[in-house]
Length: 224
Image 1 (spheres, rainbow, N blue to C red):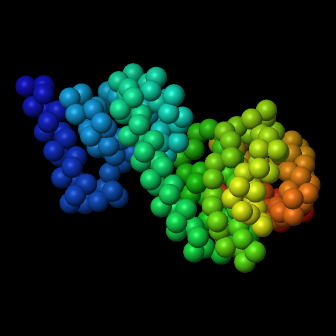
Image 2 (image 1 turned 120 degrees about the vertical axis):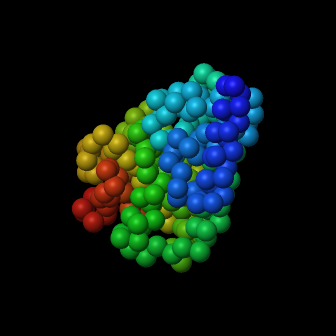
Image 3 (image 1 turned 45 degrees about the vertical axis):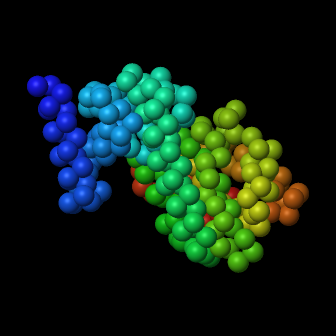
């Protein structure tokens, strides 16, 4: 009887997606739907509860490290690989679309970067690379953690900018439980990065600080 209930739930999830689309699916339902394909003989509802208890939202689940996901009860290697595959597919699609975007001012950059932090409960840092025409090349996660923490490496950030073929860069990071204002450490780290990028002829044009759906430009505030 229990297996029949699970099978019926899976069918309902798929029918809902096919009939009403992704907009009709909350994070919990989307995760359940995805995991039915990796865990065909498992009741995925408790697994999804474990994931959301730890990571709080679908974007955070997908952006979690593979090794961490494998430690969540019930996920296993198959579930973790499927979730990370979904994230990587979405990232490649976004990068393809990004190549058609030109960012000429702070408002455009803020509008572009805010969705990358939607639902984030951890601090993240993104490096947005642009060509000479300010066309976006890529927007990639540079590291987890605040820009003033030990996880932030100026050298690694410069290497990533060179790897992406950047002429101009925008740095962006969030304060998930704070306000969209740069800290003293944010400012000093940003100035160090700007100087290092200048040494390889790459311009850091802005650093955006995100919190609660709002975005503050360090360029607009006079720090750059």
